[in-house]
Image (tube, rainbow, N blue to C red):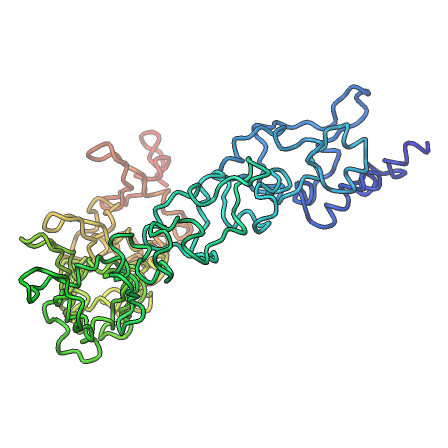
Length: 524
């Protein structure tokens, strides 16, 4: 009895609390909301782990191939996803102290207790040289390349031709551990730490006094540091060849020499032609190139459209510049010509957008202005409300209020394109949308239309006065259902239509039993 009550409460079923009294490691994780079992709220342990099937029965069973690892709280991504479970879930990788202390769990090949940090399974491949946050540089897509690593964030920023150098040229194996690459502690404060002195000590100045990372021959002239001038080279300028700016000039001896004398550089136009062809000459705040561009590159745009006469909002914010201002072209000389960035027309939506309604709303007071119903947040949903519809020629009431717009406003071909119809040419009549279920029986002049008997509240909401017909209802006829007298008849197309016009009005037409059964009998 004592063994039974370890799992069973007297007079009750097995409870999760009883299970977790023994499975303390699991209890701690469920309480903390960690792991797979913590997600199974409202479930009973016995639903998956059923006892009393013999000692050889396997209590823990699941299909590894169908198991959703995301429910454990550790989502498998990249190269982790196709791995077999046993590649990670091994005893030697379990780090949780409570799990390691339970030999029974270890022998049962538990799945608990694994670490979630990279080094828990992979170890520190850099042997303490770098941060322990592996995901700073690496991803689960693969160890190499370290796609998240940006050398600009290191103590030594790569510039010029250093950017193209393979990592292994500078980061070699450690002397006492050839399997580990050396990343920390590399000298970089002077060029000679990596490069041999080709001048064999003839120059006492530092290499960078004459050379730059853009190239040995291309760098700068002898004993010249461009950063010491009034025009330090930055961005794309740092990668320029000297002769691209310092054009050759004819010297006094008749020889061509590079011009390293004083040059104009106060304005971008001193060296660069106006790529915009004077488009911004009248805009004082945008007249200088650096108002929009930087030395990092022509396409590194600083232009803020919010400062323009047409600030971009909603979906316009994500539209590429070329969609409105045209694309970059190449002229006959092979030079790239930027798009026309001058002020465009923008007073109305249709300055840029085609009228999606094909002119159906031009007759309105606002001339069919798009912003009356739409916004820059998106074409749909429209801001046209039921209140707006009630102000139109066809106010919505009754059952019409719940009808989807597309049911009454279908898409039709207009000038070769599908356009939803909103302006009704034929007017707002019932038969415009609804088929006549009476087959024209009420087409005579006495009735002005469907609304003579029906209303928008519903088809069965009738306002029909039978006294206006050729057969006035009296006596018991007042309580007879309509369908008892008006039967369905077969008309053209084998369609059943209930007969109203031409319904017999004689008593014998509906009550055949009142006819004289034999000659001389009394008529009722």
